[in-house]
Length: 443
Image (cartoon, rainbow, N blue to C red):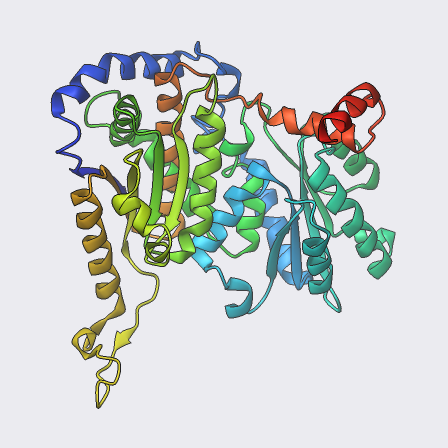
């Protein structure tokens, strides 16, 4: 197992007896998950997903990815929320933020996650003169951001290669049996992959939702699933040695002490989208009934020059969880420069990863001295196996943490509020009365 949770810097903030005291509640949350009798129990398909997945579909995902890598220069992945965050997070963590510029072969761009015409026009530009395919991801097919982008991109593809060939270049990840996108895919003959009924979007990265784009990036999805499977076994027993449960308990103990914000930090820019995935996972799962830690994130050392001052000396409302990646994917040897014009020769004759680690260690000590509780999630390296472990670690901790808060970690009722207002203001049929009332409030 390549993921470890450390309480090394929590000793001044949480005592061991507090972990012992919260264990009966952790046990109750664990029992609710195992017995599937807690809130949201119809969305627990993620729990055994790493071993109990559709092997036939898994093989088709690999075949589709191989075809796309062979016949396309560009893959456009249209989805929003859980329909893109996990896939993009894994791709960028393993392949790098600039993988499209630094790696030969298929370029992968994510779209359908905003209503910005500027962004969509930029996506259109990257297809100019290129062979491209589309993976549209939506359970219903009517999610505004995704459906709008797909409408435009499908037409663009048909104009480029004709309707018949376009139908061979569109891959739909959607509901197994119903919905607008499923009906359209069946009618047009598009290859389809399934968004499982019992897996919510923020838990879906290890389903076809995430696996097809990840496989298209050339990432070993067998290793990804194996990492998650090993983590599933590792975190299956409820006791004080379960590190996912230690993390969940830590979050809740600190929350009850007035720490209302968790800042996930990492000293690796390629982890940026994993930060975003974490924010959706915990934000949508816990933010209910006026409860929940607000998930925030920083990429260090960059954000030490923006958020560092607040973290060090601002309101004591937060704690930090550092993701410590032990082995960099690439290193850089720092050479001495004659004349030492920048005064940095004291850093020479060693690898840059050593400097980065000292910066992390110095930051941890400084923030800790400033009154910030700090938890560590240690990851051996950013590869497919370890990302699989880490994903399941966060899943299990999130589920336990939600039940400790006495909320349903698997729904997101508040997400619908903005949609209703948006539909009304745009004049969607059936929203006429609401439109008038909203426009009156806007003045």
